[in-house]
Length: 270
Image (cartoon, rainbow, N blue to C red; front, side, top):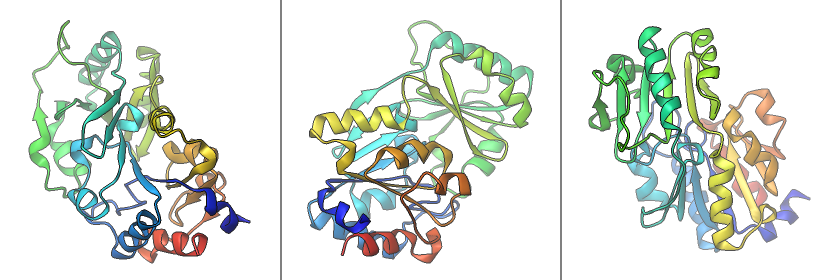
């Protein structure tokens, strides 16, 4: 039944971390590149949907896959294949300023996802080591450790990244009613506007392409992928995904390092 459904697929959407690229690595698995290019050759367009800001997307994705669209910062900023912004949702200035104050008071690492760089308000060291995990893009981290607030007229971030004690981070919810908290990994959270989300960004593109979710296949491994796995005609969870994510999927493939992307594509698209 799943194989039959692929006949209507027009768009394939991929998360990045632990879906296309294993955390700590910088290249897509060769088998995945080959399989994705097989989809493109058959006329299926490819989208990236990630919590990463555009400038943190691995160069190998641009070079080997050449996506048609990029939904970044969990849907808060969408780019076309020419890398032009076609949709964006900034956070609320007052809420961001409250989070800056909170992070300084409680010694939480705080990074702000801006249009051109990630501004680090507190704990540059934890972002250079834990957050970057060996990425060569360290120059994109902009040291703003003297920043106390964002004044009127200045750019407002489209997302925040908080690092530190989880209970302390969770206790900040009242400061950002518009903020959606997505746990990225232990002691680390993505925060972005509830007006954004991967679904909003994806649906902006679906509208432009005149497509519906019935013509989409999605691939993911984490909590912020669950809704797109459920909405798509076919949702594929990676073998390395937690059980609650796998439960949202129509198909569970192999681990990322066990040719998971290729296995799913070659099994479903025969």
